[in-house]
Length: 476
Ligand code: XIL
Image 1 (cartoon, helix red, strand yellow):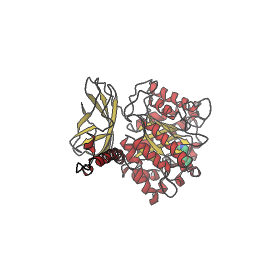
Image 2 (cartoon, rainbow, N blue to C red):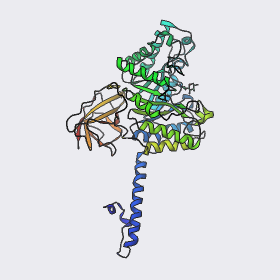
Image 3 (cartoon, rainbow, N blue to C red):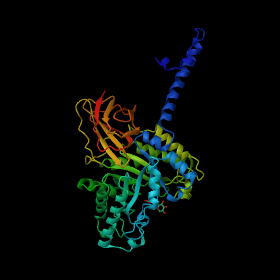
Image 4 (cartoon, rainbow, N blue to C red):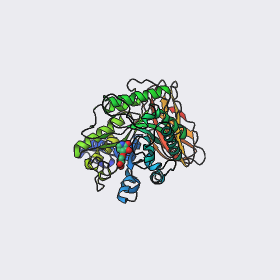
C-alpha cells in the first residue's frame, strides 16, 4: 500500500503514537510524492544539454572562435551545451576569403573545441546572399553558380563526418507579402540554385543532415513561411535531398513569438523533415522573456521531429543584439529567469512523449528522412527496431526507432551486438545495460508504451567504429 513508500524512519513505533503517526504518514506520503517529483527532475538533468538529451534532443549555442580564450565563456559553454554552431566562422567570407583559397582555421578551432568535449556541431552556412567575400559579391551568372557549388563541395567535404547538420542555404526568401524569393546574385543564377546547392552538399557529405534555414518563418500564416513550406514540400516530392528546416527564431517586438509557432513546427515536420530552432534569441527581460522561452521549448518538445534548439550566443553581451538582452545568461554569466524557465520546461515541460511520432497535420509524403534506414512496417504482435548511424573516425551516434506491432507495447528491449572495439559511452530515452559486445536497451519510464503501429526513438553514442548494427526488438 502507500505506506510501503514511506521511509521506515517515519513508521509508528508504538500503538500510542499511531494517530499522530497517521497524520505524519499522510504528510510523509505527500512528501514522498514531492520527493519523487524532485528526484525525477534531478535525474532529468541540471544543465540545458543534459536535460535536452533526456528528451532526445540537443541544446546548442552559437560560438565565436575569439571567445574560446575567455574562461568565463567556456565555463558556461562546456557546462551547459551539447551542440555548437560557429557564429561566423563557417560563412563564405570566412572560409573562402579569396576564390579557391580556403581558410578553416577559426572554424576548425570551434569544431575541435566542441567535438573533443562530446558536443555536436551544426554547420552554418554554405550558400547565402550575405557575408560573401568581395570576389563572390562581384560575380554573377554561370561563373557564380560554379563558384558557389565549388564552395559548397569544398567546405562540406572538409567537415565531412564532423558536422551533424548543415544550413546549406540561408535566408533565400524575401520578407513581406507574396512569398517571393529574395533577390540576390545567387538567385539571379536561376531559381534552381537552392536545390543545386543541396545536391552538392549531399554528394560531399552524405551523412550530414541538410537544412534550409531562414527567419520570419515562425508564424504559420505569414507568406514567407508558406513559401518555404511549399519549397520543402516540392523538394520532398521531387527527391531533392533535404532533411531539415531551421527556424532562426530571432524574436522581438517587430517579429514576435507567434501563438501558432507549434503549428509551424508540426506542419514542417509533417513534410518528412526534422525541424530545428537554429538561432533562438528573445529580446526582453524577466518573467515576460522567461515565459516566451518556456513556450518555445514546450512547442519544440511537443513536436517529435523538433530535434533541438540553438540559442544565438551565450551571455547577453555576446549577442549580435546585445542591447535587447535576448539570451539566457547575463553579461556576468549569471543564469537569468529565462534560463530557469528553459531548464524546467526541458525537465518537466508539457507535451506528448517527445520521441513518438505524432500524426501531424496533412502529412503529404511518408518521409524516408535523412540517413535513411527504412522504418520497418508494424510487425504483428511485438516490435521491430531499425538503426540509423552517424559515424565519424573515432565514434558514432546511433538513433534507434522502435515500432510497435499490431498489439502495441507496454515495454520493449532492443538487443544488438557491437563490433569489437566499440563502446557505448552515453544513451538517452532508454535504460542501457552493457557497454560492449552484446548490449541491451530497454524503454525509459516515459516511452515503454507505444500504440499499435506507432514508433518511438532512443539513441546512444559510442567510441570506436560501428559501420552497421542489427537490432532485435522484444516487446512486453
Ligand atoms: C550574425 C552574427 O551573429 C553576427 O556576429 C554577424 O555580424 C552577422 O551575422 N541570421 C543568420 C546569422 O543566419 O548568420 C546571423 O549572424 C544572424 C541572422
